[in-house]
Image (cartoon, rainbow, N blue to C red):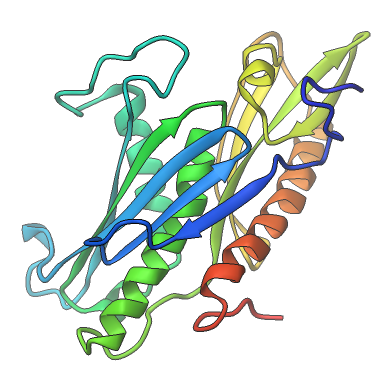
Amino acid sequence: MKRSDSREPAELRHVKITPNLLDYAEGSVLVEFGNTRVMCSASYEAKTPSWLANTGAGWVTAEYGMLPRSTHTRMKRDKIQTGGRTQEISRLIGRALRSCVDLKAMGEKQILIDCDVINADGGTRTAAVTGGFVALALALKKLKDVSEIKTIPLKNYVSAISVGLHEQGNILSPILDLNYVEDSDISTDMNFVMNDKNEFIEIQGTAEDGSFSRAHLLEMMTFAELGCQKLFLEQEKIIGSFFPLKR
């Protein structure tokens, strides 16, 4: 099948992760999935939420947002992030990143990951998870370097990717890493969060038109595995010197 940007079905868009663009954040990256660009920053607080006080455990949370002109027409700013898509994605990112951290080893400290979409061309939440992990790792490395923590409490890598089912001639075929045009015209859209042990952390999916079979789901899972493995290699280019992939 021919895709809108001429990629092969299992081909990612060009992925680029640029670290340390912000002077004051403990960790920061600009992550690019094609024309989708997300600034991810990690901020350290020497305390945890009140409900974790005296437990000895740390916390990782996230906030996601889109700049008003990250989209084709201006979006209103989220003044109160209490529900809807923004909160859903924020929680997804937080859950994904907590899965890769030994929270007990962090001690009673918190890291907040801010993911701000600069330009949206599909896959903003998957780019945010992928870049958010690298920003988190950089922050933990910095905290260890200044003796705020004894070890870097990472357990594994985390990345995320979208997969969709494209209908052509009554045949549904999977495609990896959807851009905006594809996402707007797809019959099924799924987001997969995975770790480098080839395990799934979260799967979100909806049949926009009709339904999909178990066989189609397995095909999409296979595409997600291929995509996330490629993303781990991109992440390792930035953090591999202190937290290499296990091979």
